Length: 454
Image 1 (spheres, one colour):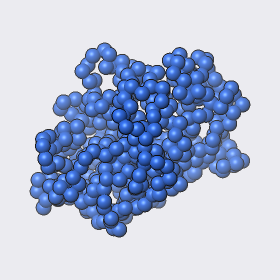
Image 2 (image 1 turned 90 degrees about the vertical axis):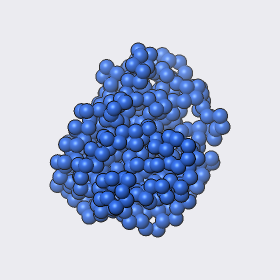
Image 3 (image 1 turned 135 degrees about the vertical axis):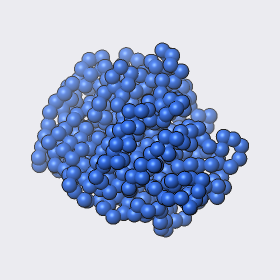
Image 4 (image 1 turned 60 degrees about the horizontal axis):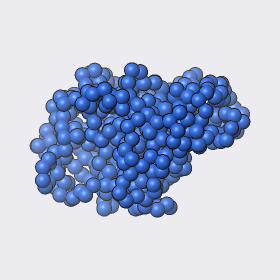
């Protein structure tokens, strides 16, 4: 067999006693034959996995074998349990005489621990819009965990102007083999592979993993539901998730808790959405219960869409309906819970923002009940945005920057720090990374440090 590890390795869904290890076999990742995704023959392949406490695989070695099945595009999801909390591990795979790259992962902290957790927020990585240089820098940071808040791929046809071409399927995708090919195109990127191999990931999706701005069941037609089911399957096949899709659905909202410091509540703002609700009744009830009962210092919402009110001067709509501004009553219920240590991390808009969450956004003097940080895109082009005008129209918003990059964060027992990490260009390789702003919250609003907004 030729090298089947062309899509790299990954880990994810860290818990205090375990993680998920991932790879997907693909000897020819951009093979367009629907019956041979990744150029693999339609038969099971035995894969051996190893996990150890050191990179030479001599200490605390665990190993096993499983079958990579063509039904799941020869993806591998190994749920390893019985590990030490808050500990680094290293892993690799072997198949057909070939050895994969080595990945580093880390378990979540012990439930009683108060150690600070280092994490990153990333999103929006349209392949043809630019290089993933920011991911190379993120890999060097080796955070405890990376949260991806949506638009891992784009389903749309190739942009009119490109930095690099999409390859064998440049048109809009809608079928399973096309989604698989699009993921393969993205995952061949070495910088994305490096970021996955450097730390465990906890992803959630936005719209472009299926269809731009879709909601729930879309138009309810059989063709759309088939398309959504295919997209959900391909998402699972290419992410280190704990659960498989069933009957066209995939359980995505969940929590990942780090000791007594942070409860990361990962939301699904697409699958259960309809005209009256962003989350659906069951997910909202789950979220409200966690907000009210979680015993941790920081209650962190990890989700794709701009959460705070954002009035955009100019032609309507001044409030974007696809954001939480389109579901103001639901947002108000979440804020009315008055959960201590509320922090929201968002993406989607291809710019950096930071602001305070108010009990009443129309009254700047009302109580501050939380803070929000919006990560910019890894590569996706930004819209035309008059940042100063938006800041002036929304006193609770404190910061805007239009560069590409990610958020690098540390949550501790007393405070939470967020660094805005940006590159100046993505149209060629080699961009340096810089911290363009730093923010601190102790749970009572934002303090900015070393800010040089652009």
